[in-house]
Image 1: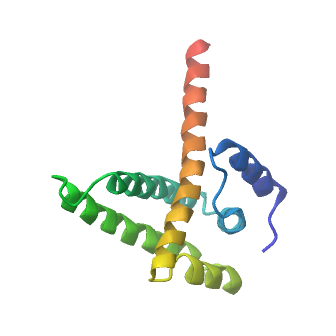
Image 2 (image 1 turned 180 degrees about the vertical axis):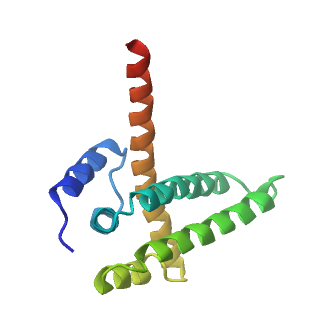
Length: 147
C-alpha cells in the first residue's frame, strides 16, 4: 500500500509528538491510509477513542494486584475492551486489500499472547492519535476564547 504525503506528514508529527514514538509506524501508516482511501475518518476516530480507553485500562490493571478490591471488575472491563477493540479492528480492515488485511489478522488479531501484545501496541499508537486530537481541540478552544 502506497502511503500518501498527507499521511506521511501526520506520521512524522506523531513520531515526534508521542513520548516514545509510534510502536509500529508501518502498520499504523496502513491504518491511516486505509481510512483516507476509504473515507473512514470517523471509524479511525472511534479506533483512537477505544484504543486510548483500552490502553488506560491496561495501565490501571497492571498497577493492581489480585487482592485489590476492584481487580475482578477491572479485569472484566479490560477483557470486554480487548474484545471490543479486536472487533472494531476486524470490521475496519474487512474491506481492505488482501495484504493489509492478512498482516493485521496475523499481527494484531491473532488469538495468542503475541497477538494481544500487538493489539495493545496498536492501541498505544491509536492513543497517540487521540492525544494529538485532544491537544489540538484544547488549543483551538484556547484560541477561540482569546478572540
